[in-house]
Image 1 (cartoon, rainbow, N blue to C red):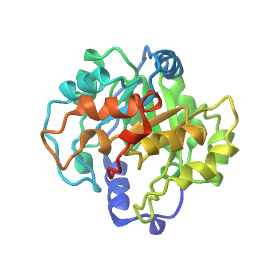
Image 2: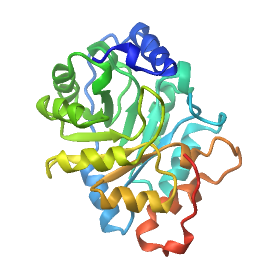
Image 3: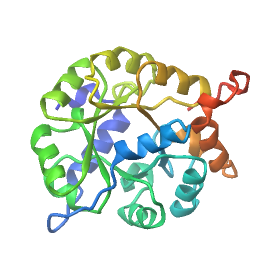
Image 4: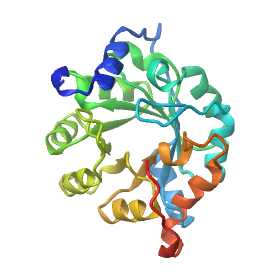
Length: 268
């Protein structure tokens, strides 16, 4: 784990809260849907593979959306999302394990548990198809990946640079997310994915995360090698409580079949 002095104050606060959060009482046994299969189905249907994120709020969001998580997830799937990500971190993102449980019961696509897991017991909070592990936040990545797989989870291992990618690969990661957001400054730069992606083996499922807010961004990440895109803020649109989540999702999932004149330059 990198020094906390390298983290933005908001991120350091998230990590501190994660360390004190309880885990489950016993190991889960998950029957998971395959993310790679879901991404292939999206491609076959002519959709950009998007993992749409149910994110009530965040330290970088413009506001909070209090919509029912199930309604949001169903709207995202209607818009073509190949999978759904649900925040379960309560203190900074307004998420909960209960929201994920309800969403997973309601949608027929893989569901990612988006949280900040730092020890094995925290794997056992709620069933999900995928579970996020952040290289920068853990010391025992290889053992956490193994423990997650033993429970049936597909671990999505998040990296930010080439050194972290190497760490993830050495630990056996097969699904890797490249976060375009620098956790030290909370700044977003799509060049991050472009610099890391060429170093990833072809057999790795590679996901571009953060900062993807327009069809132009989608094309840019896909051209750089993204097998899928994880998108939260541009779909949730926290600054507009009445924003149409289905249309926000469809705008990105249909990018590769849409005319470039429809792009626009919305912010994430």
